[in-house]
Image (cartoon, rainbow, N blue to C red; front, side, top):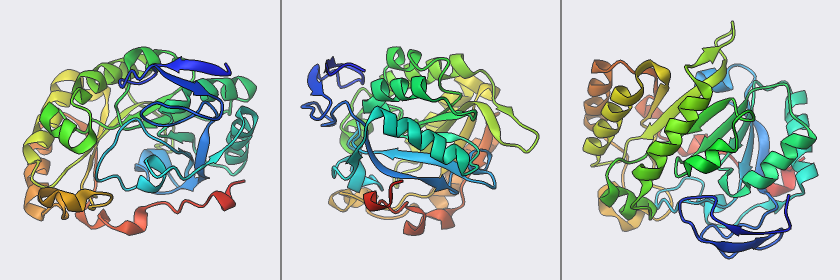
Amino acid sequence: MEDRIICSLCPRNCNAVRTKETGNGFCGAGLLPEIARVAPHMWEEPCISGTKGSGTIFFSKCVLSCIFCQNQKISTGGYGKKVSVEKLSEYFRILENEGVHNINLVSPTPYIDSIISAFEIYRPKLPIVYNTGGYEKAETIKRLEGIVDIYLPDLKYIRSDISRKYSGAGNYFEYASEAIDEMVRQTGKPVFDDSGIMQRGTIVRHLILPQNTKNSIEVLRYLDEKYGDKILISLMGQYVPFGNAEKYPEINRHITAREYEKVLDVLSELSLDGYAQELDSAKKDYIPDFDIDALP
């Protein structure tokens, strides 16, 4: 890993100066990974968490600025602990030894250089999951070919006015759609082991926002037409107004049963396979506990 780069890893194209310790780009990250949690996680999709859990590594800092982010403490709040590349590779080994189904890298984009270097030190004999908000550059994702087995991106928006308003990224769909193309090219159709645990493939997540069912329906129809059975869909009804959502009255509430059913009815008409969360999953109980003092 280099000691200093001019960064254009994500669609922000900051051309920011990043050293191991500091960064003056949109995300504010330096080159050394900042970690907020390393632990098995039971609340991913069933084919990811299974019965033993997904070995999650939550990275601090984010290339998006979603005003409703449930992990705001780490995404924009700066909570995390800087670790060496060697320590990151040790986390891979620790989680593998705990018997998890996979290694799940959550919001890893700012640290791709460190992550690649860490896998050169130690590559677990488990599927590697790249868990992202979807705001990625296809050329950056190409660097992960042969490293990542499972991509778990969001496709939050298809309309630029909404993505600009709620995530500060008017060009979100332009980049996310190209990145997902590259992810699907790398993984091909979903592959599972005999226990139903995913070994390879792409799961696209979509979170329904209050008063934004049209956006959700457009996203689902796009994914169906573009990919069909090449991906799995994970339709999420777990929206809880976190972060600065209180400043936006139209989304400062849970989604209603009527909103959820409207989107679910469209999904049932399409060829997409996957998961649809129940509305009762919209609870704060499912938010991970971030405690850097508990890091291995």
